[in-house]
View (tube, rainbow, N blue to C red):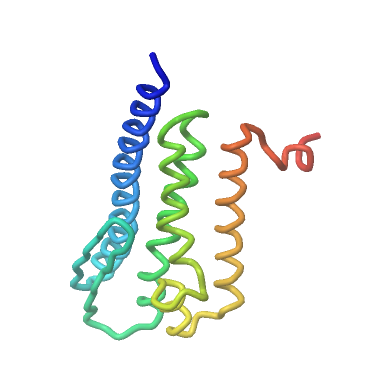
Length: 167
């Protein structure tokens, strides 16, 4: 096979990968919004959601006015997606496409929502409801650190912290 054909095949495979990645990203955003939606419905609120590839929104109207309920509904999305992503990572073997999905879910659905400095994020909404910034920052740093830990381990095929916790 000549080099021109190899380049053409490579471009085709990269395009296919891009299309698959859009599906995974959309699934992650949809799952994120479903966590908001589900908790709001469990609390007795009327809710609707919309999910695009990179952004989504959930609108809810509760029969009661509670900052705590609003905080819990906002937390549900990125904490739920964090647990799902970590679970996928833990329960599927190395080189699994599902592990890649978990990294995508962390990058697009967890980290931006947990970032306290991003206007319009779930974290900024949680802060506006009176949740302590130091506590939310701690949660954000834990999630950010977990993401990078998983990403580095996946790329390098080794556990970077193993020497510190193994006997």
